[in-house]
Image (cartoon, rainbow, N blue to C red):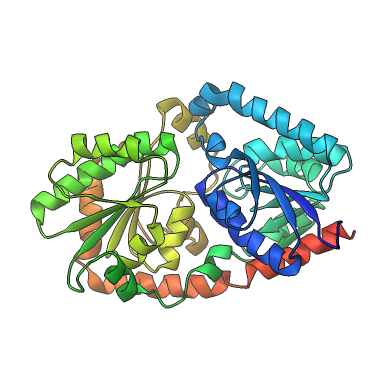
Length: 381
């Protein structure tokens, strides 16, 4: 370590990984102000001084069929990155989520004596539990964001630490609803629906048309509704034609990012399954979780699931606390009806907000510091 500060390599593979890694880097830099960090990442990481050799959206692909289409490019990036890290070994490698990319890379680095840490446990408790053997051969330590995960690893002799969820620290317990509405020029009595179709190009292609068509149905029935659609930077050109095709005249307000403001301001959100659903829960928002993908990818994933839920809020609460409309059930009509069900039952919305507040407290434990403490122990082991 140079000047007492480590040189780290990180890989975060999409917008949610960039967000988590950016929060982690904030904690690492507080401990080691002269920290050097490079690899694959996005703008949140760059804001912490991270040097991105490749942009994070190169890895933002979900679904077996979709991955196959991009396999050659992604495989080439991993090979080039591995060669660079083996030539100039960092003090440690931290793979942030993206297990399909990171675990193979981590295995190769660990075999060559480079300490390997994985931040965000793969969802072995939900599907593909057999991966735990591969994880054991790939990493020196797993940083877990859910409290039930370390015990799973301990049973297999894999070092793991619960560090809480960084979003639970970043998002305030008291939702800044009024401030968010002012920032978005929304009146206190307006009813707002946030549409979050995902951050990956493939997600937007399959999910956004359904959400936009649902918004058109909702607008037809209640003309006073307002709709916000945060768009990941760089994907506006994909979304704008979809709005024109599926929701012309609805007045969908496209936001350049700003998903947290949209969630804080809205009354209900129609949202793609993923990290964003946990963000919605931390903003205490009633939601309708949805997902759709290539038919073949869906058939393959469906067979590997262990739990009846796919949405993180439902998994963490252990029940269908919020509705899930997936694949063939993700029709505009059903999405619109489920959204209205929340808007028309304020008592139920208040009840789910209370449950999400309890969940928020359980997940909040200064993740950046806890993760940094665990990483420091690995570095000095």
